[in-house]
Length: 119
Length: 201
Ligand SMILES: Nc1nc2c(ncn2[C@@H]2O[C@H](COP(=O)(O)OP(=O)(O)OP(=O)(O)O)[C@@H](O)[C@H]2O)c(=O)[nH]1
Ligand SMILES: [Mg+2]
Image 1: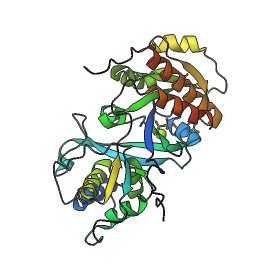
Image 2: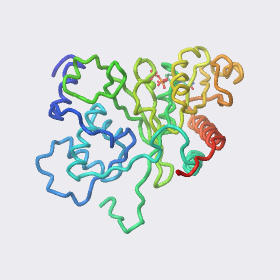
Image 3: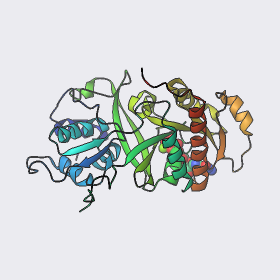
């Protein structure tokens, strides 16, 4: 074990993603919902344990932020792994209904309000 | 197996929306997230460069003047096909407000204030104002009672006209729900006041 908290921490994530640069991360926001494709397009061999954990967890749609929290990895690192899985056709994503700030749909706001009122 | 309910049109993929809970250090953000979340609040972090953008090139991130920003979040399943995420921003880290993805697509925000030290929440108010994200202020009554009237809080914070100020106790689920309801009413009012977008063309 390495005594310093941040020392080991910064190195390990790059090992996971092979020092890859310029990933196309645009598909993944914090609340992009990720779902594992079933059945998988190819046998799940040659994947890292983190990839397999993602595939297992996302049998039910799971937000990218939740995946990062469960893997205990920085969000950037997780989005790169998600890009890999998306490239391989192993997951699908649902983009949030509100993309940018400003004028969200009135019906959506009302639906959120009704849901909160039931808390 | 889960998700095998795949008859056409049967299981709609859920949608996710988010609300930000911001404010100075120790004002009760994490407490509020935990009070309403259906799960134990989760924790995630992100690298930001000093220029304040998400790190795109992870090689050499160690020596690029990057910082790590942490936040906690919770989840509320509102309906089977609509999930609300609440993100609590970090109170003491300097760069969280430059995390673009955090603000992008947020329905709105809650700024929690401790009425004994309002100034610690100024940065959070600036954050929402500058980005045009509607918000409400939750005045956390740390003194055990709400000593300050909403009007004087509004004046002290120089809030935009119409921004609600709601007394609250972040430890109480019902109180947090009421703050979120005030936010939704405000968002609906703001949306109603906006001109309906013209159909393209
Ligand atoms: N009296 C009172 N205490 C509160 C209230 N909300 C939170 N607290 C307490 O205040 C302390 C700080 O609350 P947190 O929820 O950790 O605050 P935070 O805003 O997440 O803090 P940082 O993330 O460090 O900025 C905890 O001990 C809470 O129990 C409140 O409404 N009333
Ligand atoms: Mg906190």
